[in-house]
Length: 241
Image (cartoon, rainbow, N blue to C red; front, side, top):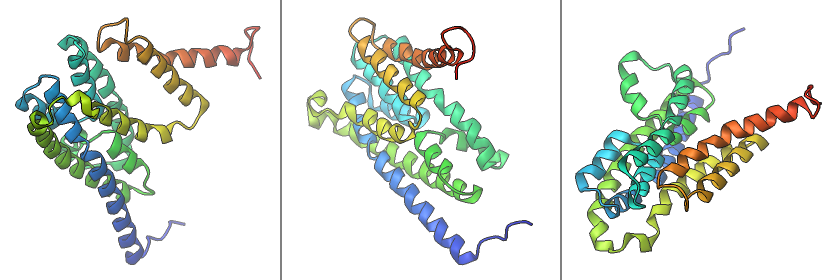
């Protein structure tokens, strides 16, 4: 028997709850665009270059990785490679969201630009397609507008702040990313992968050019999978228990 649709009053209350949560995420994360604007200006990028990154790239972790590598003396190639690698995760989000949201073909290009950690997290947390669409849209639009506005303000205010490194604002973006990632590490394999990636990335910072350690840290995933496979086979090469 098909499930009866929820009453209009219940649906309206659920919609308001989704909008409230989506706005909370959009505002909270959007304000960190100020830190990106300051960090980017401190790394030597112009106002136009800083704003273009937020308008066109719009994925905070990749943006911080790019300007962080440039500020550390990395070449544009290695900085862009690290940023690109971090951005590829959004393609996997998109595969999952495509089947969940099933948006009209006409709006998919614009929606694809909004596929980031926060919009994916909010959409995947909903109970049905309607709520997922609302959460995705409200989070994406709110975050995009606020992130770009605060990026502009941060870049304009960088000169007034003086030495941007002394404020530690470059840590704001990674801190937000880690805060969103931590609750998603539910299994031992996921926690081991994250821990190994941190060890590889931080351990290789003194010996590799800026931007390269983050690429090497990607080896954490296949290494953990290999270890799990060997453990499953057991010491004698057979299937473990």
